[in-house]
Image (cartoon, rainbow, N blue to C red; front, side, top):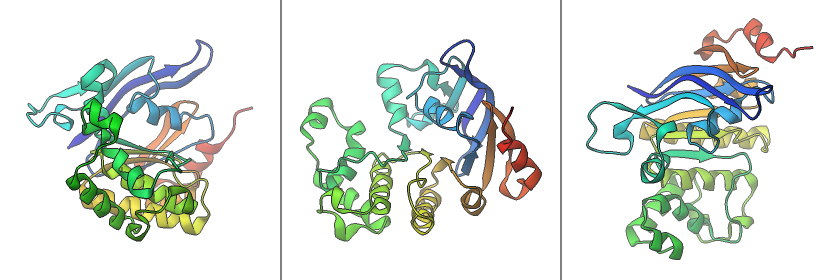
Length: 259
């Protein structure tokens, strides 16, 4: 099933400096897609357009309406046209993992994880950070899934960088996401910790049938973990295919800098 379809997506901050120049692609449910390209090629902007952290200039980003409405009629909705409650409902099904973890270090690990479910709470409960026993149970289960159950009641700033990123994964799982977007989630980690985090991310996505689009900073990690690769250059797709078809000549074209 196609869970995400992007058509002619364009984004620019000025008329003379387009960031995305007509991106089109389909992503199937359960795919683990690696996104590669030089800095400035549009990787982060593409991910941020999908969940509307950045507004696209033109194009469409469609998801099945069943992504947020159990009474799906099989039709698609354009995320770019949503506002208010509808946009909030779709966003809670699209998890985002950032390079710098984005956890609240003064809070406990479990409090950080519980915050991932706030999108399902009424505004009053969200403000007061009131969590039910069931939510706390789910938070502990998700911490166990990322190997951090024994650290649940520590302050988040007591953990290493790799552990903090695993907290971010557990927090995202609290959203019960259909799609996870990860923007260079391991670029600040050493190679060993990078593999630990990516192994966990890919495993939980496979177990839950979650689709992942992951921007990665090294080809080695991309080839090791991605099922499919999308290569961007100057805001356009230069390659889109199975990882096994990513040849050295294609890589050279993606990373060749213009004069």
